[in-house]
Image (cartoon, rainbow, N blue to C red; front, side):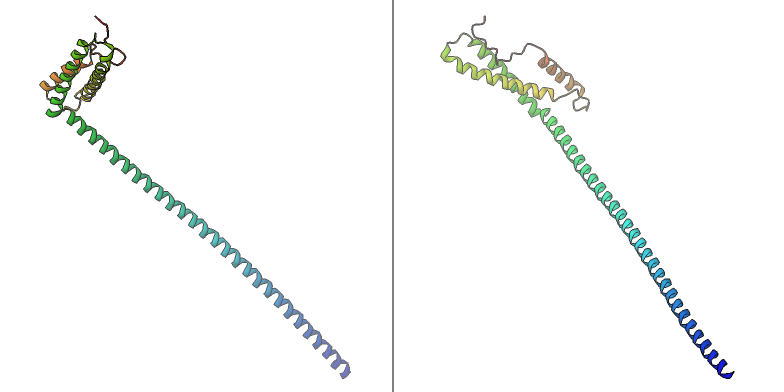
Length: 196
């Protein structure tokens, strides 16, 4: 009977060993699956972190681009404002030059020159054909002088910037009104030949 139990004991020990081995294999497989699951989870977390980092970087890049665009727009607006201010200053200086005493003396000389040319043209209205180019040259000069006179006078505006004193403006306005009225002759296309 001892043999029986010894054989049974050996078989049982073998079965126990087999069960331990199977159990160990199962534990190893389970541990391996757990490790693989943990690695997959870590990989997914790394991927999620990478995605978050990419989104953060994209937002940061977008924000930085917006800031650069805003800065460029502000610089552009500042340059445009400076340019506009410079143009306004140049216009104001030009207007002041046109209303300075020298400019007014020049205007007086232009008016006298226009009157002189008009008289000369009118006196030569019955000139012969070969002399007409000389008269036409005077007509062109008279029209250019009148254009310059009207440009100077129209630059005076309405004195809304109070650049004239009251008595000066009254005189300037009278000159302005007279020059804006009808009665000035433009000679281009309106030659005086054979008029009486």
